[in-house]
Image (cartoon, rainbow, N blue to C red; front, side, top):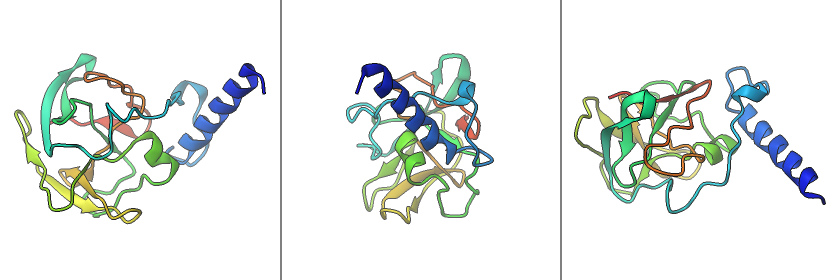
Length: 162
């Protein structure tokens, strides 16, 4: 398979995966479709080593929440229902926006600048504890590679203001 065909196939797969995360279920427009690379295990793990969430200045977004364990920006999915105890992001959606989780028995802690309420929900797909902020599940974005990146702001996805 040529590299051009492989690149095209990769882009088609990424667009298909994100279609499940769009507001209407239809494929998002090319401008709204992120090119998602596989998540880096060393930068944006789904399970945070620590359980602190902090407020930090991130580029043009201003002050938003980041995971204290790795400094990565966290996001909310606007299809999630506040205080429902469930995440609407599953399957391929979860591949692109991994859940911020804590170890069983751990409790997330609000760090500097965090004014809302942290909690957890038990994910129905794998039983992990996903961190919530003011009743909404929190996620990373697979294409954020370093602290201060905020590439996950798309239709239905927002960085979290403290």
